[in-house]
Length: 375
Length: 229
Image (cartoon, rainbow over all chains, first blue to last red; front, side):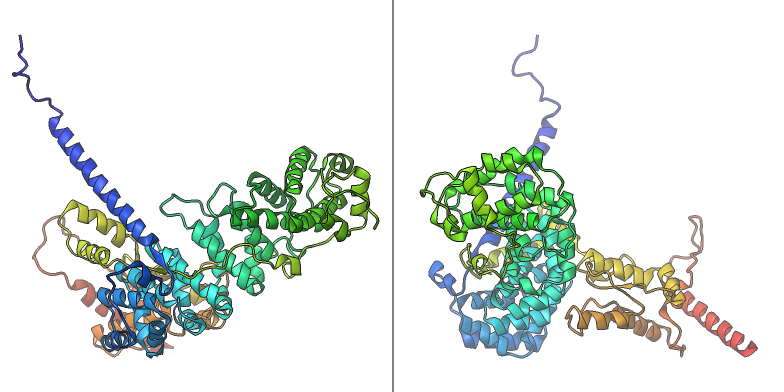
């Protein structure tokens, strides 16, 4: 009979130790990844860093000029140079202007951005992101010298580099419409749409950032969108799903780019997608700004869709859902929205794509001064 | 239009019909005044706060390759660039690497360019579908249409020039510069078989010497053919 003390060590003990070690290693790596992601998310506006961080190295114009001269002389910027420049740019617009005035200094950062060392590329992209906090002339300079590289690096496989490029582009587009126009000539809109509609894992999700970039283009430079870009977006309308991140920007982008225009021959599948997208993603909560954006521009897109009289076909099967959606929206009582809803209703009735008697009987429009005045 | 209703009450079908009859089918344009009011708050420009410790950590990690953890880190940063297996050139995107391999190392492409029946050179922008007859035409297109800088760093023509200069200096002979680069790369390198019994252990430098000789031979053959004409 065997006693408790004489029990031999189980044969899998060594394996257990190895397994434990492996799990510990994975946990450590995961902690590191999470820390990197958290660091990535630390973003500040111009001058905001001074209020947030007490122990900050105060960098002035002379420091920036010194650093710019140094990197220019050596034709190379190392990690510390780019780190200090990044911090200096965050501290004030004077520092940004001082760096922009030094001829040839920006080229050194761009050289690092286009180099072969990934870590230097990331640092250079982050440095340019902070540099883009400057005024329009600084953004124009970045666009002329590095715009093509920023757009090219959107296809990079390094997530941090990709994200920094997106942030830089967003800053540039928000600042200067001339730069936005130049970037659009580099087919930025098409590239952004591809990224916006590509579903990926949580870690590599760029939909939120690309959605913001497209929103800014739609807001500031929609007139500069080329016909090719518009056609590409029209062809790939169905690629975006309402459950994906940044879905609320979709209708605004579609409306501002005039994708549902008379010149774009969209097929019935595209219209069906737009209709479903709007109804599936409907949150009748006008308190959130992005939700409001989706509702208001969704109604406008649908109104235009029925106005263009496409080959929608009969929508009898969806009549109930559409009526319910419209009733919910009319019940909100928002003046601007009600005007657009009335336009949508008129266009639906005129398109004859469902039983109009049923529609008018079921729809619940509340009398308001807006309706009376609009007629 | 006379619609007599009390505010807050639902409209009847007839009332709604009357209101809709007074309206016209309309396409809402983005430039309409009522559509231009902003809904989202103005965009706030933001920079990135870089943590120096993280940068230093990443740099030291990539330099040393002893521990397993470091190996993982290298994998996550270094292994993700696109480099040509033949000439070790690093390129930032798959499209640029594809262009590089096709234009610099693909014999079929070189032959089809020589034939010149249709434009073969693709634009540096993946989304642009225009093709060109020669690299210079493409460069002009990129500068004029896409606003690229004239000294675009990932220009394939630049790479071929550097390659050409290197080769000419290595050969140390006066070779006709009009001979295209593709001809040089076309020459095959046949490795000697030894079946596991090499005659001597030495650095293999036959490739360079062999290439030079073969090229000289081709040149000589060309000269001879010209003489015959």
